[in-house]
Amino acid sequence: MKSMTGYGYREVSDSTVSFSVEIKSYNNRYLDIIVNLPPFLSPLEPRIRELLGKRVNRGRVETTVRLRELTEDTRIYLDRNAVQGYIHVLHELIGEAGLKDDIRLSHLLRLDGVLRTEKSRNIDELWEKILPQFEEAYKDFEEARNSEGTFTKQDILEKIAIVEDVVRQIKTHGAALEERITEGIRERFHQVLGNKIDEDRVLAETAVLLVKYSINEELSRLSGHLSVFREIAEKPGLVGKKLDFLCQELNREINTIGSKSMIMEINQRVVDAKDALENIREQLRNVE
Image 1 (cartoon, rainbow, N blue to C red):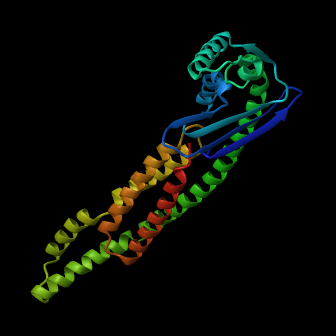
Image 2 (tube, rainbow, N blue to C red):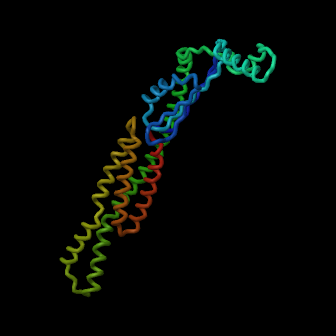
Image 3 (cartoon, helix red, strand yellow):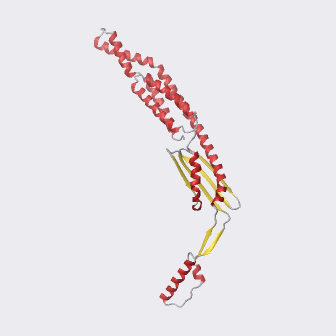
């Protein structure tokens, strides 16, 4: 069992760059990958998405890469079109103002876009440095998900044990339910007919009510669902949705037993089971 919540972080620097890789995730119904990169690293986004998409099945996964260049390979060049445009406009401005002045270099250097800079970056070389740290961060991220998943599984199975115990206790009240129905029918017959009670009629009415209020089928299905639940919980891979579906089925059977029961002890056990199942479903919202 694996949690959808995890965190991994790695930071490293060499003589040219300093960067960090952060991976964190939250529970989500489907897989949602968010990649945050500096603009110049945007070509790496498909690679990161592919790596995560092959490894994570559900959850909102956010990956952030921060990079600071310690040395820069920068090229400075003159934008000739901008220079010519500025000179043309400045001459028009001098003529329009009726001035006698010259255009100097100092004037042009104050204007934006005359000199441009361009940083030379090799994306593939940067990826070769980022990838190992991404893998290390992912390893930490995966360990965190597995660790939390182990604790979640333990808690879920403890709650399932509560439901199993409830089922065992309810089964012990089966005879009491039949007795309660029989006594109720006898009492109603006695109120109407006094001592002239037809035993065959009592047995027939009892049989009808036992069919109506019997919980044997529900108990049988509960036992089967609980057995399958434990079996799936022990399997690797995607189990969250399957277990959540089984919780719905368990809850449906428990509700049916509660609606049929005429015994206070059974009703109390039904409340215990419903509380345990609600806690399990809350935990399963974070299981992959």
